[in-house]
Amino acid sequence: MKLAIAGCGRIASVHYEAIEQLIQDKNYNVSISALIDISEINAKHFQQKHQIDSKIFTDFEDALNQVEFDSVLICAPHDFHETLAIRSFENGKHVLLEKPMAHDLNSALKILKHSKSSGKVFMIAENSQYWPEVNCVHDLLQEKAIGEIITVRASFRQNTSSDIFDSYNLLPGDQLDKAWRFDKKSSGGGITLDGGAHWIRPMRIWCGNVSKTMAKFGYPHPAMEGESLSQAILEFDQNVTGIFEGILTEVTNFSPETPFRVTGTSGELVIGVGGFGVTLFNQEFPEGKKVLEDHGYISSFRHQFDDFYQCVKTPGRQPVASAEFSLGEMKTAFAMERSDREGRWIEIE
View 1 (cartoon, one colour):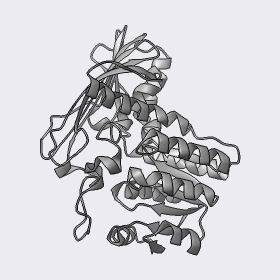
View 2 (tube, rainbow, N blue to C red):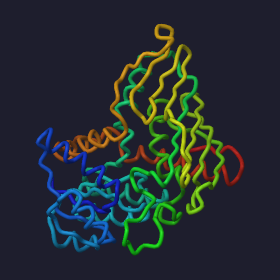
View 3 (spheres, rainbow, N blue to C red):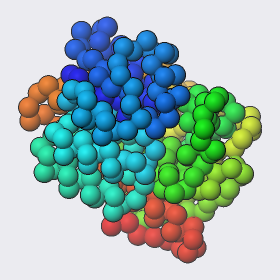
């Protein structure tokens, strides 16, 4: 696989570190043909950090015209997704596209249309689909380890001063005057559409699609135009009610958080603090039994790229979850925004 990386921020580094692991552990044949970023500073920082011997471009068209690659990893701001993805499909490239698919649904539908006509592999990089703890909970729910699901809770909390992805910060010397994730036009929304997708996807894996929602937004982070506090009640197709909460602040020190709790008729499943490990509580284990040791959120990136690589290398193979499936997180986020704006329950088609 000859891979171009479009967007050289912190999340691209997480992807690349996963790729390096697969090259080392599984002998995967992956080479980086191009690093593309509108900020040459970002691209050079990425290149030096990972010691990558490839050309740097600040224009995607130049990369298409000057170097050879068959696949693209797109980690750019959300409002760049449509142009980058469509141009990739038009030039016969396989695409691994960071979530959300786009900054709005119309743009996402255009991307899907071009992906289908291209015949190339198209995968949304929603790594929660590959989070070992999330999949362990899914398997235990299928086995009725806690009986029938009654309710599910998902919660994430972070601050920008200690954000391990540097995803709301700028590199020293960068000429941009504002981190793009603070800009609603670039991101398409706030934390619900962005990081919230990683918490909504697991609930959809366990409980089915979200059918309606009632939400309330807040704005505790002064620099963020979209919501930085998101709280919602979600109703799922499987007649399950869930609670979602996300918050982003500048410097708040948060208490340890269990990101997911699933309550059933005979027990509970809890993903541990920081997203590590799964503990089962039921009649047999009232004090709790750890049924999965610590893998963690970051480990999901390795499994995710493994699926993409195998799809590219194996004609006819499809990703674990289709690109269309990721529209569920987008529709939920936009329905939550509308619910906050109109002060009522919103049904999701």
